[in-house]
View (cartoon, rainbow, N blue to C red):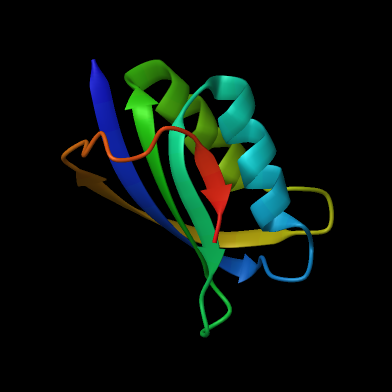
Length: 90
C-alpha cells in the first residue's frame, strides 16, 4: 500500500548533512519525494512510497546522521500524489 508522510524535524538538523542523509536513506528504500531546510532551522521532508519503506525512512529521520540532534519529529499523513519519481534535495 502506498502512503505519503510529511515530516518536520527540529533540533540540530541544519549544517550536519541531514538533507544528504535523508536523500541517501530514501534512495536506498526506493521512496520518492524531497527534503529541504526551512528558515526556522528545521528540516522538512515529504516521503511517498510503500508503507514499510516510508516507516523505515521515518525511523532513520528520528535518529539522524552523526552530528545531528533530533529533538522532535512532527508527522502528517497525506494522500500519495504520485507526482514524484525520485527523491531530491530542494
